[in-house]
Length: 262
Image 1 (cartoon, rainbow, N blue to C red):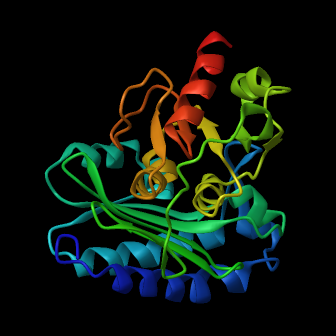
Image 2: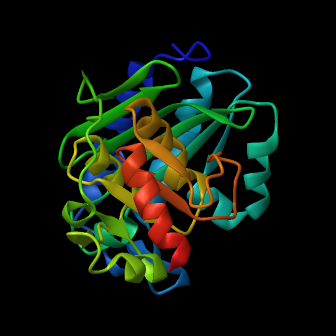
């Protein structure tokens, strides 16, 4: 139990919100239910807005004095992000991670919640409602995948056999050096695939807390490595830098050497 919060209680809320606000709209969106934010590729749907609204009502009730930072709330009012630097516990929410996939009717999306206190992620949840997959982590308490402890194997994988995701110039630097690059369109699914062993690494150039706060905690609790490419520890309050995740320290070191030259 973290800050008097039940890990199971938050998971139950996520399942209920997915069932009421997200899944009924999956492959059932009208044109009016989808709009672009900063670009045609940066979308928000009615499911994002309604799921974030309900989570904003229910999560703070679990922890009196807590506040919420949601992706859509920050888009509407960037000053909301300042809550990350305060003393109050913060629920960090991505109501539909992988909105582009969701809008296209592709099942690679998830609901993500992290609980951050004084600059540290103390708990995290990722729910894939289509695949019925739930990952949950507690700082110092490990991570579970569908209720079972998730632990990454200590054995490194040779560079040419690695699977993972990387975008932009980082993907170009790794092309031909690893076995396969994937582009899931959802940070949450990259973390789920790291936890279940399908991915060995992931690299990201954007550090928004709703994308990574929960997932980095999960990876670390599973025995993996998640740091900025320059070796700096990740923190959910960071806005600059690039994030490199790997299943083992040796894999992280090998990839960091390539990416810092790329």
